Length: 67
Image (cartoon, rainbow, N blue to C red; front, side, top):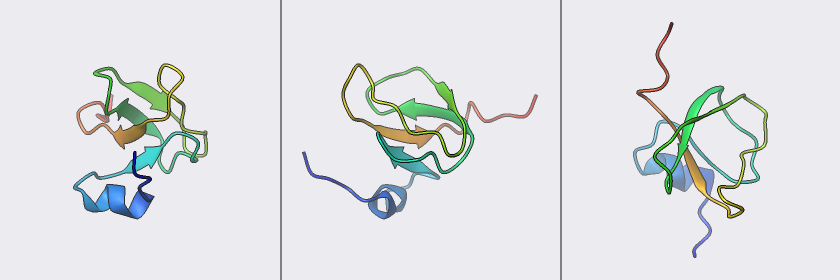
């Protein structure tokens, strides 16, 4: 699997993107490419693995609505 930089991830149309092991760039609901669910991750937290494997995370537009 090719390692991709965060700039490459953002250039592919994602508003915000991060990968396992990096610090979260923005508080909100994030979804993994391999999972249909969402997780709330706070800015500065380390992005988690999914089922023990590294993954790419994208900030979810539909889950980031104001209450």
